[in-house]
Length: 138
Image 1 (spheres, rainbow, N blue to C red):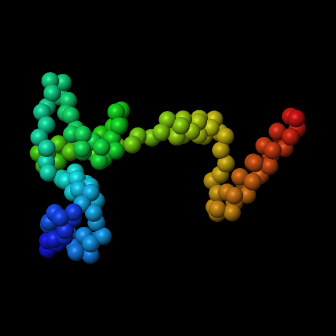
Image 2: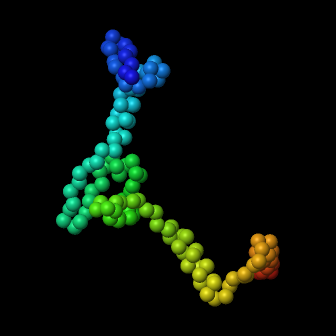
Image 3: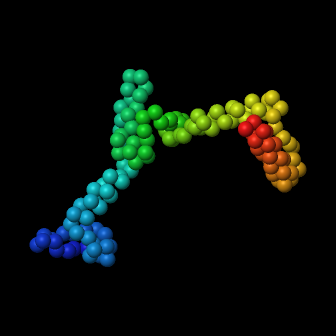
C-alpha cells in the first residue's frame, strides 16, 4: 500500500510500510530505491564469443563475489547451460594430504584403534617421544 509524505514542500509517494517511511528522508529513499533496483534477477542476454567465451554481467559478477581466476562448474541441465562458482582445494591442504599419503605408504602411521581413547593415548605417546627427542638434541 503506497504511503505519501511531504519533504521540503514536495509530495512523495512510496510503496513501503508507513511505519518505515515515517523514519526516512528522501535521500534514504533514493538509496533504498537504487539498492532495490540493483537486486533485480531479470535474465540478461550475453553473446557467445569466438573462443566460446561468455562475459558475466558486472552486477551478477559483483553480487556473486567472483574474482578473476575463480573457477565455475559448467554443466547442461535440461537444455540450459548452468554455471556454479566452485572453490578448489587450497594448495596447502593438497600438500598436507600428499604428505600424509607419503607417510602412510612408508609405514609411518598408527592404528587401527578400537576406541577413541586408544587413538588419543597413541597420539600422546608419539607426542611425548617427539618432545623427548627434541629435548635431547638441545
